[in-house]
Image (cartoon, rainbow, N blue to C red; front, side, top):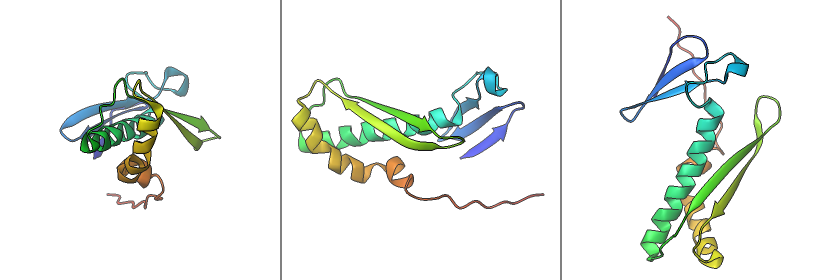
Length: 124
């Protein structure tokens, strides 16, 4: 991934051949032309768990109807102290609940959140 700054509080990230515009809301000095970084983090959690559940369900021959995964972050200053995930589906609750442990094991995003990133600076 490469992010390039486009002025103000806006950046564009090249990800997998796609450009993702990232911006802050006007109240934080941005122009609100894209999601803010924390929205992308929550989107990554929600989408990864959604796809992991779909993968596990497919492997077990289970049809997941109306699957939705919602991720909400609780702020404490400049960080989330909690990310809450809510899973809904019209498939029976016990069927979906049986898929969750395996989906959690294969979701790269939620597993990565347990790792503290190593920062390296290269100037010039």
